[in-house]
Length: 251
Image (tube, rainbow, N blue to C red; front, side):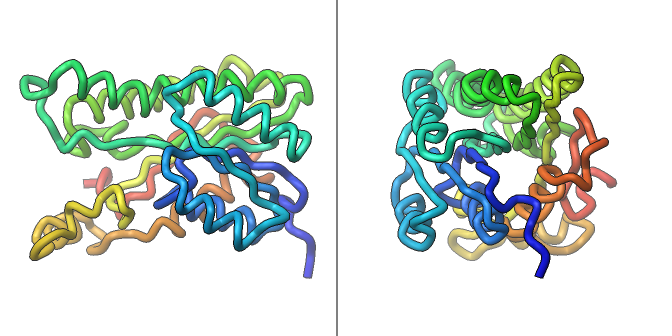
């Protein structure tokens, strides 16, 4: 069997304790990569560490805390010597709250996690990539970064910001060996969307019916797209946003 192109590379993943981030971590680990996970939740990180003791390290912390981010990046480089790929996956929902029902605390929580946190992590890791003239960023956007209806006022605004930020980072650094793209998931069955499946699950059924593909996706499907965007096959893919939404934005 041919060796994976990710074998020996180091991937830094935010939001790695559950959902899409967890699936991304597993996907890269299965490819022989070293993975450093960063999340406010510890349980999922501990599970990954116990299953992959030689290839996975982690720290518990928030992307909204610049000091914790800087410390985690320093630890990752200390453990593995480099960071080749950054997956900015951490994010939070706003409960589809309309602007007049959104208070300042909710707005700040969403913006601080979904876009300011991405800014913190990117700025902590990018200088190390630039020194080596090589690095790939895969940012987690959403269909809410492309169309309305995928979230409330704050979430939709934050994911539109992720799209713009991704494009600008790629434009600014692509001649220096950096490549940045974003993924825009639709209905993915993760703990973050557990409320849709609560009770009689009518909301989850409605979402599946409204999705042209007729179903929710699993986080592993997003992880497979991540591998493509992080790999050599997508070397000419720059500053773009790839939807994985079962046709939602094609309607």
